[in-house]
Each structure stands twice: as structure tokens, then as C-alpha cells.
Length: 74
Image (cartoon, rainbow, N blue to C red; front, side, top):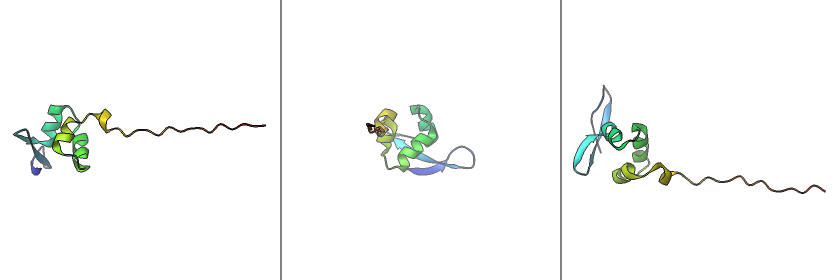
């Protein structure tokens, strides 16, 4: 991933995927993700392939259920 000119004065990462090169923002729009979601996936160490193709359901951590202990009052 390289950094190049993006929108405005900020620099947007340039990503190559399947032989095409675009800014991260353009890729996010094309694949239907928020730019921040794509950025976080890549920051967390996902490969470009994983970041582009993983569904949000696949990435959700299993929730812990709060189990209430049953108390018997005598």
C-alpha cells in the first residue's frame, strides 16, 4: 500500500487489487464499505483480499451471555 494524492490536502493510500490501482476511498465506495471500515481492517493487519471480501458477520466476535445465578431463598 502506497500513499498518493486523494481528496483535498490529505493523502489517501493507494491500493492495488486484482491488477487495478485506486485510492482506498474509491475502493471503499466500489465494494460498498465505509472508508473508515476499510481503513480499520487494514490497520488491524488484514490483507487487502481479506479486508475487501470479509463480511461484517464473519468479523463479529461472539458475545458473552450474562448468566444470572439462580438463588434460592429459604
